[in-house]
Image 1 (cartoon, rainbow, N blue to C red):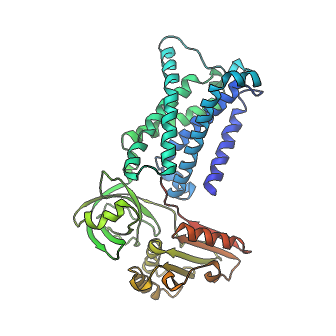
Image 2: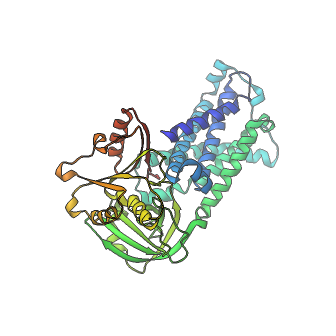
Image 3: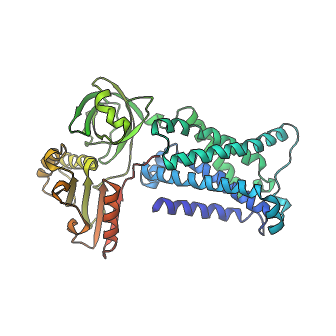
Length: 428
């Protein structure tokens, strides 16, 4: 898992910096090490929450950035809890490992002394709130509508814990790279927290428009056409936007179903997967205002390796980014494109509202071969049905996670050079 590997790499880099703190193991080293890692990982978590465009490109998409955001948040909570447990067991750990007075917390007088006492007192309740929010995020006990408001408390918790870290850190820290790194990350985390609290995150990538049409194409899929006029900056096939139809409900990620044609008209195919998406056919109407933030994403099916077999796999509503890619090929018909085998998995081809459009597009593209797998007819897609004939294979996948795991696992057993591209729309 790339995001987990990235998190572990960050952990090792930060831990290596702490090696400058003391020559040997002591109670104070354990305490400062855990606190140092906790605040640094939390600072990185806050920075990633601002959705910086440069990092999105570096990490391979907003979905990857949010996965890393999730893991750095988990690591921050783990180290914060470890820090608290070490402090609770101070007598036993001092007897076991000894003490290092050079790592004692700094002592101040006057106002700084009062602030230090306050920071120490607020650290514990801040930890409790942080752990509570991490737990409800991972377990999903709280519905998204309520969770997103609770999640807004985290910047305040961060600011409290940042003050706690800075005022209680040993003076020795600020004379070496460990302190400089922590200070730099805390400054970044503080700016990110203020951006979050003032609603500035993503503001320069937001565009207002109108809902032009709402059409329920099947029992659980709604097509929404938005007119963004000339304000929309354009998008690439495979990208998505954070769409806000209702300010109280907030933004949700939806794939852009069509290629950019400079008209300002954007199409979304929205599947009823939760309370909000099930209400869209009833609550959304033509003329209603809409706010789009983006475009985001680096899922570009036409950006595969040269001389590698290109296979596209879509399951249900996952065909959306591929429709955009096919339209883009038609618009840019003068360009050379790699041959593609497109496998579409559907639960009922006869009533599938996407299939007609998909067939119309592929019929106009001789370099795209379409294969339909209808589960109602027992036509389950397996790795053996992908028709692999090359030693280098790029698979672009958008669909159910279970199917992705099955295909990826089976393909890894084959002696091929495989790249499996998949976006993970789990921003919670």
